[in-house]
Each structure stands twice: as C-alpha cells, then as structure tokens.
Length: 458
Image 1 (cartoon, helix red, strand yellow):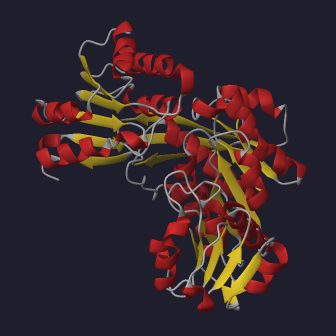
Image 2 (cartoon, one colour):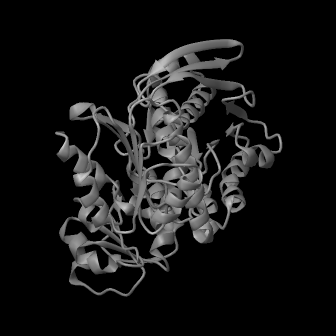
Image 3 (cartoon, helix red, strand yellow):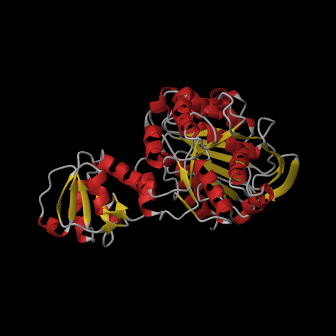
C-alpha cells in the first residue's frame, strides 16, 4: 500500500524534520527487515527499544523514521523523521490510513483455537475465484495487523483474510478500529489467555466485540452453532451457523476416521456431499465447516469448496503427520496449545488401533485455574487410552494425576525438559506406534519431534 508523506502529516499528530520523501510502500518495526526506502517505526517494548536501532535502520536504507523520544543524529538530514507521542499509536494510525484505501470485503477470524488453520482454508477457497491477501502465519496482533495492511495489500484485492487474536481486555476494540472488518467469523470460546481475561466469560465478552462491530455495521456473521457460550451470547444474532449436530445450516459429520484420515458427510440446504481428507480430528472438521460457510457467503458452491479443501495441507506444527522408519508416525501439534485445541485433537484417537504415545507440555496463560485445567486435560487424555503418557513442564504432575484418575496405566511426568529429552532418546518404541506431541509455544515441544526424527531416520 502506498502511504504518502502528506497523508502522514495531515492525519497523524506529530512534527517532522529532516528530508521529505514523497511516499512509502514498506513499514517495519524491526531494523533487520529494513530495505531501501522503508519507514522504520521505533517501538518501545518491554525488552527491546526500537530507538536503539535507529542508526542500524538508516544504514540499511530507511528513508522514514517514527520516534517518540528525543534523538539527535546527523543521519537525519537525509531522512524523514516524524516525532510523535506514541510510536505504537503511530503504527495503529498508519494501519488505519491503509485500511481507508480498501473498499472491498475484510474477513475477521477469531476464536480460542483454529484461527490460523481456518484462515488458510478460507484463503485456499477464495483464491480459486478472487484476488485476495491474507495475514501470514499467526500474525494477529495490534502490531502485525497494521503492518499487514501497510505492507501486504494494495487496495485492489476482493478480500482480505485476517486472523484476530486477543490477550487482554480492550484488544479487540483496538483491532476493530484498525481493521474495520465487514465479515466476522467466531470459531469457538475456550480456556485461553485466562491470565488476563480471567475465565471463559471474559474471553467470550472480548471476542464478541468483533461480532458486535460487524453487526452494527451491517456486515455478515458466521458462528459456531455448537458452542454453548456462543449460543447464549449470540442471542439469535442473524448469522450463518455451522454445526456437527443440528444447530446450523452448514453441517458436517465424521463418518469414519483414523489418526491420519477422515471421511466426512457435509450437508447444506437439503443437499449432502461425502468426501475423504488426508487429516483427522473434530477440530479440523469445525475449521472446514467455518471455511465452507465463508465460501457460501462469497457465492462459492459448497461442493466446489469441498473439492478445494481436499488439497489442504496442515502447516508445520499444526497437525502435520510424518511417517518414519519402523512404521512410526509422528503427529506434530507443537506450534501451540490450550485446553480447547488439545482436547479437540484427541478426538482423532478415539478408535485408534496402533500403540499410542502422547507427549504433552504445559499450556500457558491459563491464570489461577492452570493446575485444575491441566488436571482435567489429563483426564481427557486418559479416555483415549494411550500406551504411554509423557507430560512435561511445571504442570506435568497435574496432567498425570488427572490421567491416573481416569485409569491410565503408564505415565511419567518431567518438570525438566532436559530430562524428558534424555528419556525420549532412550525410550523403547514399538513398531507402528503413533506419537502425538503438543504444547504451548514457549515449551519448544518441536525439540521432541527433532529427537524422534533423528532416531528414526527422517
């Protein structure tokens, strides 16, 4: 997106010095990503202050700088320097400038689990017919969304597909103001970010701000008809509902499945379609139903969207399956974890026949109920009857105690990751075993995946 210097001066409070530049097409808060002609925004973070990297940004080719602290440097004579009260607010305002240049549809996707996978599925469906842009990876914050609007859109797209994440109260207000979505999709409400939002009610209230914003602006809404909190808070909101039961117009059921495959029956408006997919789990089914619902709103026949989803491949760490030597399969869910996503993932093992090993790490940001939630998760793990449970982290014993309550026979807890790694390096693993690995991002559970790949030849 092209942002002119005059637009910055006329719309964002501040003062400038140095050299005026006609326009900017690339903005960054990381000096390492600066290229010739970039605009560097010196954010002041908890651990790193962007003002310490201004010289580096200029040396790398930055022609614009936003600052909030006094900064005297000879480099400024050839650079457009904009002094503001808050560089974070500058970034948000710049994102709003970019948003105003876009006149078509913006999809905001939120939920406690499945946002990134659903975003990728929707992008795959829409890209067959429309010109789209989508946020990359799990970029979903008040920093990454403005940068997406500034750097990854040009205003000509038919749709923008945007993941919207929250951590604390007020986050969704900020994202709504910048993004101004006109299509809202709410996947689910679960125990996530409880450190700041306290409980599911707090999570729901914050996420429903997206629904309220789009509703007030006469946009389209897609909701999970099976989620109890969404059912209660939606208060018969005019929306397209999806469901695995009979709580929505877009419905789907798993007819048969293994750990790596499922056959699904989809129904919409008295027509049903059956197809097979190379991934498994109720969480994927809900993501697919949400994506098919979006396709319907975009005017794409459901059978065509289903055909597109057959080509979908989960991203690394989000349910990818790897076949190693001796018939051993790893299911890599290491990117992140919370109780909703973990329990949903277990659904793929309800009828497993192969020896199953489950390796789980702590689920973070669960607040004062963390111990209880880990214990309940252990109870859920026990229901799928793994041959072995390995829990890792501060709450490893809580997971294991919950599993033992439900009769798990073999389990071991490690509070130290190093000891867990050593154990897994030496663990005797049967042929044709399935090993499921999941944990929060900071637990670095991908290290376990790498150990097993090294052991079994991939």
